[in-house]
Length: 348
Image 1 (spheres, rainbow, N blue to C red):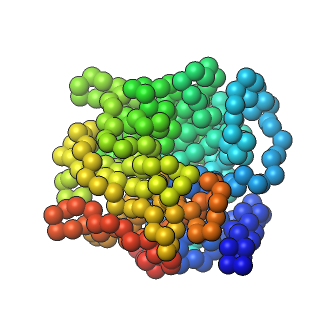
Image 2 (tube, rainbow, N blue to C red):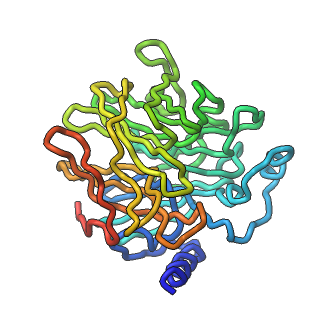
């Protein structure tokens, strides 16, 4: 009965009207099925940009023309065809959240058709840039796909495709062009981390965020893959030290988790130090594909991630969660303790 009630609550939220709505939640599971959340503090509010994680049982909608074209001769997971937009959530306190539906929609990305995944967002010169993966391209594919960039005047969108094509549309160093993470260093340099299928690259972005430019050594894409890397890279900096983080294991099951490395450079080398977030059989399974928020002006940190609730069996039945992330005196990241209710309200 407990599992049944949980599924009903999630389904009701997923089927809510597309108008904005507010939801109070001590943690984030009640916001519905979402994954790959990236958290930010923009314009006096907290924001989360996730991937929609539609259950496989959800009724399939009609294919759009571009989906029909790209599907010809290719095997595409049916759920990926449901992923044609990205929502966002805003909050004044990390507890009460307002949904902003379809801040990026397939109708505003002419080259993309499905598999909208893993957004990353940055503010630059008064505009907001959202990077995203689309079309789930493989090495042998000849149709457009990869990582795109869209721009908006507001963190709430709408975000409009900025290039008319992917920013990164090919495999480099074996890295599938998915799971982007953008990071601005203290000197203003903007680094771009991405990669699936067990490989990760770092690149440097131009000031207008519309192209990849050479790094100091002249390379465009530098492989930085640490041991056990699978996907979901993320970068933070604390007290002059760079913390490169990623997900390892399988996103479909309890092996999924988050690990990290430290370096004195944003481009590595990155030597794996250990896993900081993993399955807790009393709380949830397979936590991963995270992001990290530092409360402005403090040394208080939160980790936002997705996980599989106990009792669920579908790989896409993923919900978001937020918990505290702390550091030991030697600067290492302490293991994250997953909680049912989250850390509570935090007003900036």
